[in-house]
Length: 312
Image (cartoon, rainbow, N blue to C red; front, side, top):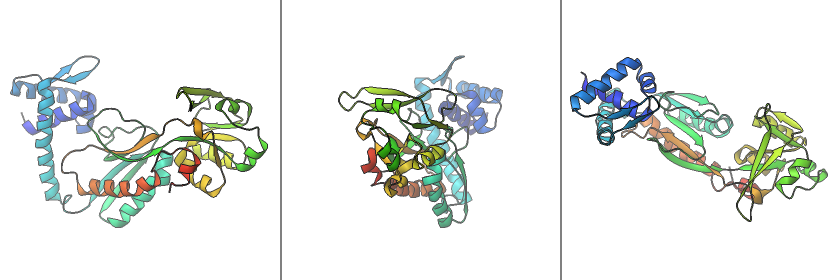
């Protein structure tokens, strides 16, 4: 048995909570992963994992061994990276994942600056509204919007974004007054990403804090936020989108935010990474640059037009 290989199989399985995902991460078959884990447990004389048909969990010994095994593997990887130069210079390939529109508006400029600063690095930027799996997809840094699930990943908070309802000043001048979320049911609205099912916009009562869900019968349905924003600027109706998506249009006066007092609590934006010790310089450099750039752009509670006017 190769002890380091067995440790790698165990750490990958514990982090992914899946034998098949660990095999995919390491490029090994499911039987090979299972055999390495069994050999490691036999070598140690104690079970590290509790496996069932529905889930996989660490034993108390496995939890303690995971921390130790990570440290040993990190040291081995660090030695290899030092020999390869990854800790002496920013080089190699960096894989970054981000939501499509946030990535295009805010992450891509960071990538441009990063590439200009470090000529020996390559970047693969994955823009997708699906949450990429850092382990399965080989992602070094992921930009996530929303409350994070508990995991072994480390998060760097870079901002907050909310959802706002907005329309053009011209449309708001000629439409019925919008004072409460219920008023949206009698005016023109633009929805996106809900072409085949009813659309519901969510709000919070400023008095009680209770959720308010408003079914929307749209005048126009589109399948991207960009199209919904363009239609709102053109005066077709009101749309509900993320605050950062309309920050420029609000500052320019092309859109105006309504129902600010009914907005739900904003969601955090985080940079996620695996959090191993001795991060390669390419990852650490990107995290530092992205945090410094995104925090001013996504700062504050993202509530209503006043916050949008302070965003970059």
